Length: 71
Image (cartoon, rainbow, N blue to C red; front, side, top):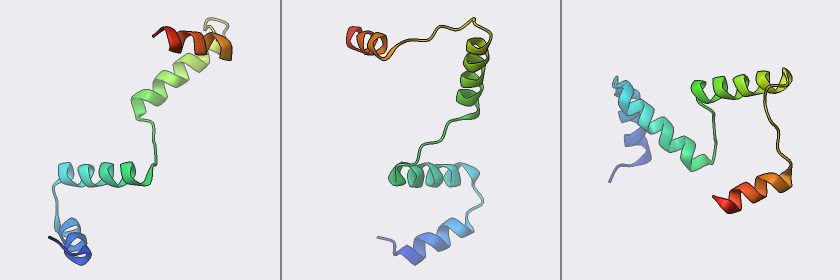
């Protein structure tokens, strides 16, 4: 079992981006922090723009609840 200091030293010493990404993801999950990916943000922006232009469809809370229950 590693001590906190051992783990910190191993994280600082690593140059493997894959390992650092995993550590980052684990810490985010633990803190309950949620972040959108670039792809998710792009999709949201596309939908927002379609809505602004009158091309997108909005749903009432009642409609959304009915869709969730039906799924």
